[in-house]
Each structure stands twice: as structure tokens, then as C-alpha cells.
Length: 255
View: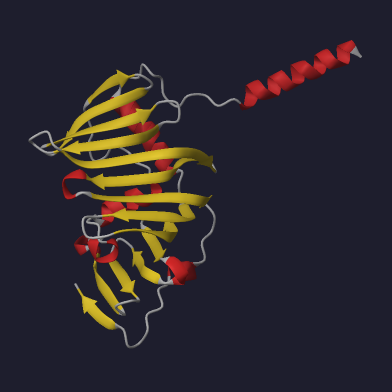
């Protein structure tokens, strides 16, 4: 009996040892390309994302909390539905690499235009480009298009110091999970102009993904936060989930 208990204990210990995760990066890592590769691999593992939760919008003109439904299919098809209290739709957005469609039921207006003219302020009163919106919804940064910089260590984080054009950028990387937890962008006067913060990371189908995503533009006093309650990763999404039904009498605006 004693021998059986010992063998059982060894078996459990071996199973636990075999399933224990290992750090994605060393805290002593000093090679930029290695850090970027780990970030990129995690991003590449994400194929689809469906999430439900809350969105919190704060601007000088308006502040509110609403329900949010998100669908993301790579390379870049996105669908966002924002619903306020009592089931009232604030807006519905579809966008891909070619075009975008925004429908605001309260104004009964649909906006369409090429992806390169997209601006989120028509949808959520928050200025954000299409590229930044894709990044916002997944919460996975790859430190691109920056290809080089210096790496410093600060407590349990790796700090990637670089420049995007003439703007200094600092990426904070969690080496254990191999993800960006914060990004700060400064102007030439060293003023913070953009702040992204990612937290509540969990692993879904091999993808390390944040469930809280907060983007701020401090000088404009604007912020947008997605707080996901349920997340599904790399599952097939019905194409109809990306469809926006627009009434025939809706006002159409081409931008």
C-alpha cells in the first residue's frame, strides 16, 4: 500500500511537471529580433476572435458604458456592435482592408468609404485609425513597424525603447507570457500622446490574449476600454455575423 502511494505521488508530480508552462522569453533577453519573433508568433496563432463584454467611452463631449459584441477574422475583417441600455443600438461597424460600413440607428445613417479614410470618431466619438482599431480589438501588439531599438529590464518587464518616425515609443513586454502589456508613444516634446494598456491575459487555443484593453489619448482626454466577459478564439464564425442590415430609408453618406 505504501509503495502504491509513493508511485501515485511520483506519477502526479511527473504529470504536473510535464504540464507546467515555461517562459516565452528570458528576462535577460537582449535581442530585439527574438522578442519581436515571440510577439509575432503569438499574433499569428490568432485566426478568429469572437467576444462579448462592455465598452467604456470617455471623451470631453461624452462618457458612457455599453454592451459590445466583437467578431474578428484575420487578416482584417472586423465587426463591432455597440448596444446601450434597453437594447438600443448605438452603432454597428463592419470593415475590411478595402472598405468600411458604419450604421448609426438613432440617426438612421450609414457611412461608407475606403479603409484608408476610416476614423473611429464617426462611430464611437473616439479618434482612432482602422489599423489601430484592429490592434485594439485583439490586444496583440508585435512592436511593428519598428525593426530595431534597445532593450532594458525593469523589474519583471522588458522595455523596448525605439522610435516610430520621430516619435519615441516604449513597449513593455511580459517575458513570461511573451506579450506586450503596455505601449507609450511620445511627441517630440516628450509629451505622452498615446497609451495602450493590456491586462487579464488568458490562453485560448494557444493564443495568449488580454480580456481588458484600454486605449488613451491623454492630450485629447479620450479613452476607450473593452472589458471582455466571454472570448472564443479560432472557432469558425458564420459569415452572416459580419453582415449589417441597413433599412432602405437610411441616409447614405459616402466618405
